[in-house]
Image (cartoon, rainbow over all chains, first blue to last red; front, side, top):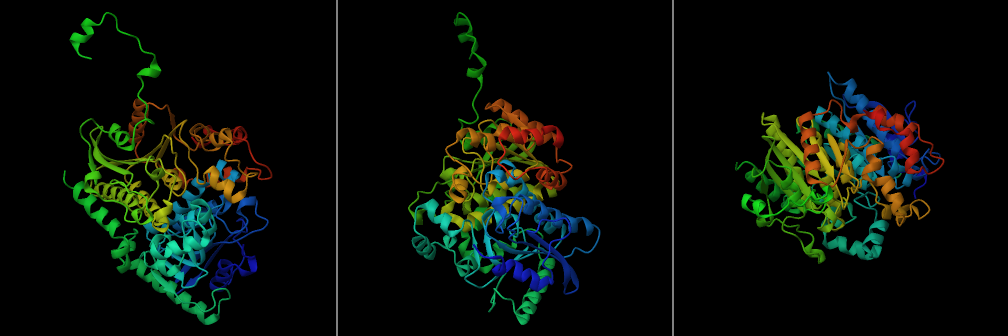
Length: 274
Length: 295
C-alpha cells in the first residue's frame, strides 16, 4: 500500500492544478479543481487516500460510496453549468487501486454509486465535453470503470508503475490459483492478460503513452509537457466523435481486436437484412 | 390439447398454480430471449452458425462456444422493433469477453442508430454474469466500459429494461450496467452486487464477509432486499408470463424523466444517513432506505 507522500495521483494533481485540498463539503478523498488549461478552464478530479475516511474499506484510494457520488456530483455540476455554452474539458486524473471491497459497500449498493460516476463522465462526453483521462498510477477494475474509462481520450505514463487491469495481480493469482510469476509469464503470450503497459497499449485503447522521467516527483518541465499533451488531446477530442468508436479505429485495434471488428460487421449486416 | 382429446378425457384435472406456471430461471438464455417477443417475429443475430468464437479461450485450454455465451435477438414486442441481449450463465458464468461484449455493444449501437433515424427500437438486457471474463481480463474490462457508453447513448432515445433473474445473478463491472438501465427487474432468486461474497472475503477477510453465510448473502444481494430498499423497479416471481408482462409494462412507460443513476442528491442523502461505525443487518437498512422515498 503506497503512503500518501508517494501517491502519484495526489502529486500530479498538485503539480497540474496547484491545489491539494478538496472542494468545500467534499470528502478528503476526492480532489477537484478548476484551473486554466490552454484557452480553457478545465476541471481536474482525482481520488486519493484518506486514512480518516468515513468508510473503513475505502481509505487507501479506492472508489467507495463517498468517492463515487462526489465524482458524479462534481462532473454533473460542470455539465449543468455549461449546458448552454462552451463545454469545458474534464480531466480525471487516475490512480485508483480498485473499487472498495466491503460488506457496507455491497449492502449500500456500491454498484449504483459507481454507475452514477460512470454515468456522469459518459453523459459529459455525450454532451460535448472533452473528457481526457490521465493515468499516472493504477487504473484497476471497477475503480477505473467509475473514474476514467468513459473518457474520449486516455493518456498514460509509460512507466512500470502504471498498471491498467481488470484485477490487481495478487488477487488474480489467488483466483486463478497461479503464482504471480506464472501469471506474468502467461501475460507474455496472451495480450489481454498482461500487466505491462506496453502490452496494454497494443490493445488500441490508449490515445498516447507519455514517457516521464520522474513519475513520482513531477519536474517543472515535465509538468509543462503533460499540460501540453492534455491541451492537444482536448483539441483532438473536440474534433472527434462523442462516442467511443475511436478505440476501435486505432492501428493496434485492427489486429488485437479483430474479433470485435468482425462481430460488429456481421451484426450490422444481419441487423439490416430485414 | 385438441378438441377430441378434451371430449375423451372424463374430467379436466385441476392443476395447482405452481404446476401451471412456467419457470423463467429454468430456461437457457436463448429460450429466455425468445420469450419476450411477439411469437414468430424474432430472429437471432450472429448466432452459433456464424461461429464467431472467443480467440483467447483456446489459447488457455478452455473450450470456446460458438455464440460466446451472448444471445442477440431482434424482432417485435407489442408491434414495435426490439432487441434482446441475453447472457448465458451456464457458459463461463456469463462472463464478458471480447466477443460477447462486442455483440452486446454492437446491438445497443444499432438500436441507438435506428432510434436516431426515427425507427423506435427497444432494448432488453437479460444479465446473468459474474462480470469480466478473467481469461480475457483487460479486454473484458474494456468492453464493459464500451457497453456503458453505448447504453448511455441509447437510453436517451428508448427505454432499456434489465432483468436479472438468477441463478448466476449480476456482478462485477456488469452490475454497473444494471445500475444504468432505465428499469431494473429482479426475482427473489436473482442477486445483484459489485463484489461477490468470495471476493470480499478474499480481499477483506472473513470477519468482513463470511461467504458461507447464505442468509447474509441473500439479505445483501438478493432481489427482495434490493427491491425493498428502492433499488429495483419490480420484483417478479419466477414465472415467464409475469416476467414478460412486467417488461412490456416498462417498455410502455418509455424513457424515465431522470434515470436512477443520475439521481445524485438521493444517493448522497442515502449515504450520508448511514452510520459506518458498525455493520448493518439487511433489516436495519430497510428501515432507513425505504421504497417510498424513491418513488
